Image (cartoon, rainbow, N blue to C red; front, top):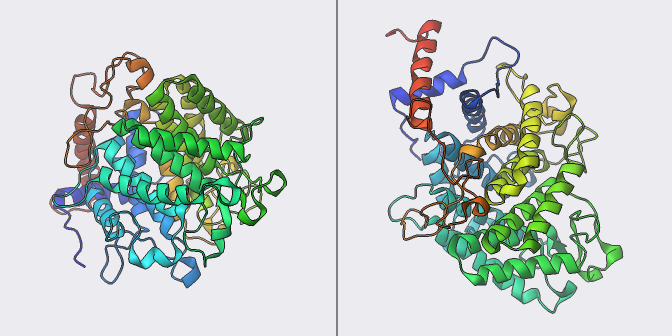
Length: 482
């Protein structure tokens, strides 16, 4: 497959963010310019792990899967990889990776445009397919460009929803009275496990489709998903902890619950609840959103402010490859929650900043002195080799943390229109901006993306950064034409 063409001007930018720093700590989070510059370097380093655009490789996939000895990463992790780059584009305005992102997503969407590509059907799981569906949903909400002739992002997300809804309906009246199984095919081991991550992701997708389209069908499925998880005890009605799931053959009885709690599961359901609150303005959903968020901040944040993966981070080498990326997903999803549920901002935004600072503080490894590790709370770089990975999830997680700091200036998730690129138009279209969430971190309903001189924040920043880039490259004497 042919490589994407990179213009000389863009090559300068890529070269600049790839240059190692002479200092031990290169990432700064002081102001927007600092945060964007840090995000740009993190994104550059993260993309170096991707080889799907190389000849003989499969677009959209990360090196793997481990089960076949091909690399450290599974199909489902690639979904979050591309979602991170959509958020990167949305937050910074940098289009450098858009073509690769589009190519990767559309190559994995499959013949039915529902993220069930032929090469993945043998091992397809509900949580992974749903995860890819939420990436299409994010693309629609962000107005991420879609090529002419390609399926719209919204239609892809709806196709995934239809698949999951059919399976959800098939389970009603059966084992555990409903809920989604981990695996799709009965011959796979995970088929016997009713999984909170899959059902919670289904709630998340349904809630976001409900807000985006206004269609009550999606609202009803979000309600049903919540009710089932709550009634079987996957969501604890006393502590608000969210548990991993239970085995179907045990009928999900209280004593059969697997009470492991992961940051990715509770933050996904919290985000879905925030979208449901935004759509319904219901005190019930507000209470759910608030309690889940508070439980996350209690269980998954260390004393120094670092997000912490509770089940496995205490001892090095205990977290699996996908778990090493959960903290970054939680950062991005909770930041998104604060857009559509503004009452969360007072608690969430300081917590996101404190955690992001601990994340970048330990990114001092490798030849570049800016490689990131997983153990933010320890305050020092620990090589990803201790977890037997190359470090992609660790890098992605820190980028997600940094991007979460830009959320006050990012437009709120868009609503549906006839827009052919993804089914999105203005961010809200509702008179009550204070509750619907305007995405700028204030409650005045006005976007605040301008610089002090009145120019576009993204455009002015990119122009200033480019000039600084050229000057820096010339100063280093790496270009003969300077």
